[in-house]
Amino acid sequence: MKHSTALVTGANKGIGKEIARLLIAAGMTVHVGSRDTERGRRAVEELGGDARLVRLDVTDSACIAEAAGTVSTLDVLVNNAGLSDSFAEAPDSGAEEFRRVHETNVFGVLEVTNAFLPALRRSDHPRVVNVSSGTGSLTWSTNTNPRFATGGGGAAAYRTSKAALNALTVLHAQSLSGEGFKVNALAPGLRATELNDRAASDGGDPAEAAEQAVRLALLDDDGPSGEFFSWDGTTVPW
Image 1 (cartoon, one colour):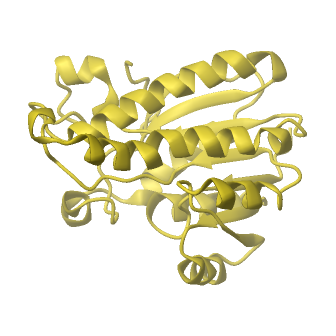
Image 2 (cartoon, helix red, strand yellow):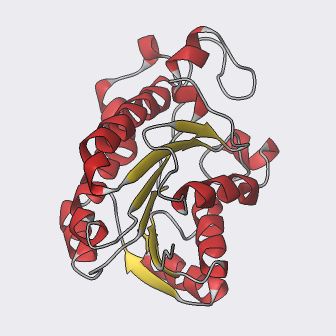
């Protein structure tokens, strides 16, 4: 089975860039989605291979539509772009804070996925991977797993956005199952990226999480769909 073309959102840095690097190494043409054109151009030059820049702001409907118009066929979509800019608990959060985070982490994924469905439907083996978070697991939030879920109600905007993304993953998987799609979510764990200060200071190697994302991106036709996986390949409870 051959996968030849991929799009990774937020691929100019962090986990997204490592995912793009591994997909290129697998011989694929990779569209490097980047909101910032210059940073995206530098990433494409560094990645080499068949990396191609696509300007893609997942919060801009016109930009999404324009990007989708440049990609005729797509085998793999990795929704990696994400936002985490507040650690406030729900009682200390405002609606605007929630809207800002959900705009990227939920609405952006919905709009990007739907915009690229025509291109994905031209693939014989379409795959969608949503980069979520173990902190979005309601099971782990109520029965804390120390690897992912923080104690208490902190980072409410981010965690609710990832819980909603998990639900969206299930619903897309169910709706597209008859067309051969595999749609799964990944909990990458705390990584040394720019997503938040803690991750930048003591997170693990982004490449480690990228390996699991690529495994899900290149699943065989008998692989799982509508499931939630950790970076180590184990299943995460919803």
